[in-house]
Image (cartoon, rainbow, N blue to C red; front, side, top):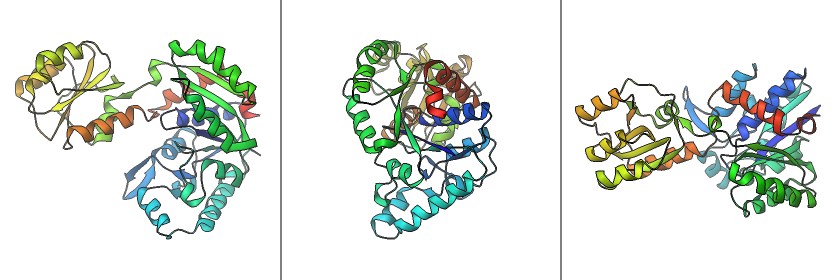
Length: 351
């Protein structure tokens, strides 16, 4: 049986989309495919339990019958980590739990696709880093990464070295048009000269970037104050902390943005409504705007959300979502399948 671990250099590389797309490509080739995320790291509460949203999506998209405790045998929450540091977790028992869950999921399959964490160091306190998992489950690994500057190659080499002989190679995801030639001409030959195969060079696509306003509403636990569409993408955050006139000039220089400001800043709210590049207004502190602002927002089909958290906390949560590479739906995975088919060595990854 073929086992492939998809790992990454950092959060937000698109690892989940690549993992699910590879699983579906293998299934399209006629293979019986299983999935597992040994460490649940992208956590949310569901029916009183803390679950990772990635295995939940995988179960849906891959039509899996397995239970969540099998798909994510270790819930790697802050509480779990604290307990492990205090000696409350048995490392050997945890590794056995992961191995048993893997064996059960792998039974009757021709390929197991394993999703790693968003950081090579995650799991170290219980000897379950992605490199440890590759060894424990006898899996080959592919490293998903992004490229913004030459220093990013340091991360790639360090992660590859950590994986050792189990590393099949690297996939560069969401490479901007400005960086594409540099990666293709300089970075790829350099890595291959260091015996690091580059198995994919996927271009950046707007449809794969950002999060929708609907995502923000759900993830922030926000109240929507307008009955408007929520499909617009948010790719960046702007803070409305200046005067209304200065804010308008600032807002007009951007696109696909969410403006974060206090619910009592009517001047900034009005400036956001006048800026064509603003797709969402998020008001902090639990304050409601005036009726005039809400009326204008409704007329412009501009979503207005209100949250109880302060501005700094809200900014951090939204930026985490935007840079977290969240997989929104089946269409995102289908598009990743197309990108891998066109820009990656799928044979090397799946055979």
